[in-house]
Image (tube, rainbow, N blue to C red; front, side):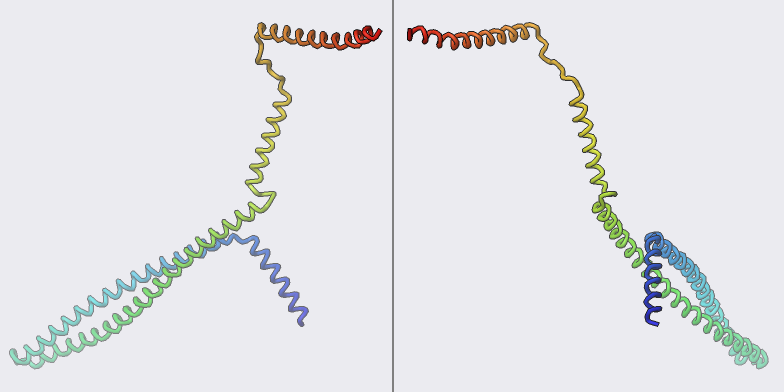
Length: 227
C-alpha cells in the first residue's frame, strides 16, 4: 500500500510539474481577475435593481401612511360632524385595508433593505479582493520578469550580453583581418625627399666601406713596421 502511495505521489508531482511548465501564470491570473470583475459588474447591477426596489417600496409606504391618516380623519369626521355611523364604518374599513397594506409594504421594504445591505457587503468584498489580486499579480509579474532576466543572464546560450560581446568580438576580428589584408599606403611620396634619403643612405654605406678599409689596412702597416 505504501509503495502504491509513493508511486501515486511521484506521478502526481510529475504531472503537476508538467502542468506548471505549460501554464502561463500571468495570463491565468488576468483571466481570474476578469472573471471577478465580471462578477462585480453583475453584483453592482443587482444592487442597483434592489436599491431601486427599496426606493419604490419606501414611496408606496409613505403614500399608504398618508392614506391611513386620511381615512382616519374621514372616519372621525363622519362620526362626529356628519353623524353618519355607516359612513364612518366604511372609512374604518378602508383604514384597516390600508394598514394591512402598510404592514405588507413594511415587510417588503425591510427585506429589500436587508438584501441591499448584503449585496453592498458582497460588492465591497469583491472590490477589496480585486485590489489584492491586482497588486499580487503586479508583484508576482515583476518577480517573474526579474527571475527570467537572471536566468537569461546566467545562461550562456540565451544571455543577450554575451551575445552582444560575441558580436563585437567577431566584428573586431573582421576589422583586424581586413587591416592585415589591405596593402600599405605610401603616404610619403615626395620625390625630393626620396632623393635625399637615397643619397644619405648611399653616403652611409660608403662610410661603412671606408671604415672597413681602414681596419684592414692597420694590420698591414703593423707588419711593415716590425720588419
